[in-house]
Image 1 (tube, helix red, strand yellow):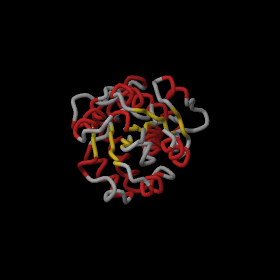
Image 2: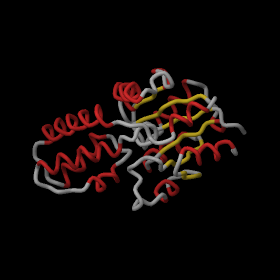
Image 3: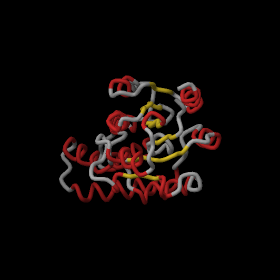
Length: 220
């Protein structure tokens, strides 16, 4: 079987943004007198930001959640517009590939399109190749965003690989019926994290770089 389609998660797979969200949370908490390391927020990668805000509001007993939400989004957008970078190796990987490429993300579409423009991939991923949680009923770990990409484009499951970096995303991919691979090339995958969280949720392979991924996909 040849792999003809790849659906990429966005944050942490195409753009190295998970570390930026963690940086934003760390920055916020340092202002309110908590000293929490950025790395402690890495475990929330893959979740929608609003869900992370819910979790942290409960954990740190934040009274004014609306203010917290607004400040986080403000910090995030400032950091993004300055520091957003591609995950190492992705541009090379995509430019050498003659497969069909899509994005399936728990982020909203406007933000993904803005991110693609910022890192110079907006000619590679056109708007109709981008699928986001605001286009479906349920975000990941439900498979809706992946099923929409698969169904809209009549993709055959056995010819389609989903690339994910989080347990939530892997779960969603597996439930869609496509082949799912884990990728730990993003900077939020520091040495303390256990790749088993991707295997346990159904990734058939977990690779640490795009060059490894290319070899594996070639051999399917």
